[in-house]
Length: 283
Image (tube, rainbow, N blue to C red):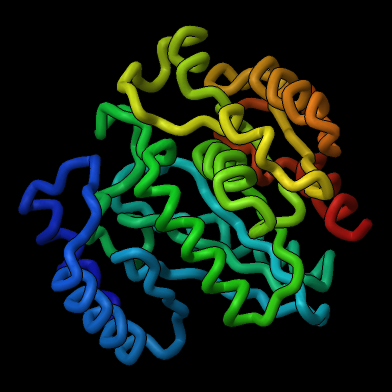
């Protein structure tokens, strides 16, 4: 029952989980995996996948195309929010209808009814670090996508990532090359340390991953649509154009779309963003 899951999440927060997470022990993984099976059995109408210690909820919008999926990854929301119910389930339904591709919206650890065994959430300010740029967090998301790819027998995977989701998509493009084929990334920071120098947003903590660090490892046939809001103060168009240049220098197909007058908060629901995304996925 979802109330049970919520109670587990609250108790974990009370125990004071830190933002950073070390590699879980085999005993922890075994326990968490059993808990995930129970969550799945208790919530037959919902979808969950166990990935690197987290039982992650996702919303499924079925499409008619075979062997292809699109994965939606949200950004940082207030702790305990339900981005699937509030926004991403509807985006998935619309995207599946417009592209005929099965579209799957992920709830990150600590959001919707995903567990928080290792991470409470990915808020930059509350955690005093950039959670999506931590290697252990990247492994969780990459493992989740790989398991979806296997479950749906997908030969092609697309990603639609907003903000922290865009950051993760960019990192995974070179961290695990070939996992994803098409990237729609919006409002992202692709060089975490430049982001801090530019607008004091994020952290100076060493050891974090950046998309730009992996550009040379990205598969040459990958395709990128990098979207920025003209009035986005968190991730201005400069971030997108710099990343595009690095990708193009490696002969990777990448284009930038700047949405006039758009801000950061609702970029993923912007009409022009969605229409451009449908066109990109249908080509």
